[in-house]
Length: 228
Ligand code: SF4
Image (cartoon, rainbow, N blue to C red):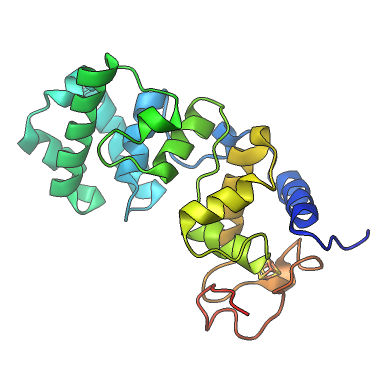
């Protein structure tokens, strides 16, 4: 196989190989548990500074007690904090998801909007969360850039941007709309298991023959940054 020289060629090959190793749609690859876009939105907001595994432990209780935005908007704050306690930062998170539910009820009739512009008007929702909801919740184009996506994409020289919004724009130009959510998840999973921040396992990586950073001694020391 010819070694792709362009970022676009590398992106295509990375998507093909990582996708072959982990088949499935964006929704199937997602590691947060949810059964509708509202649950996904709340779970994603809760996942800041908390692992998805940790979030998945509290959301069944959360959504059994307050299944709709209307329910959550009028949740008793103390009771809500008690449910969210295991996630850490539970006071801030309780305020945050209640405010989010209130905004959904007041401005969107209790429905999660689908457009980037509308989603990012919700309190606590930035482009990353909006892209998660769009791609995983609605099957729409969306390429969430978190710390794993940024690091792995820079190592693969798909972008040189450190800024997530700029990195997202560059990656969007390389990945077809229908593949963006899946592409993001594949990089996240690759970043968690193989292309880790401190000690990337290049010998076990199925794109090491096309990765410009493969086996570079300074990778972990640079915590995933990919400068010159
Ligand atoms: S070869 Fe190494 S640096 Fe490149 S993607 Fe694989 S694990 Fe990451």
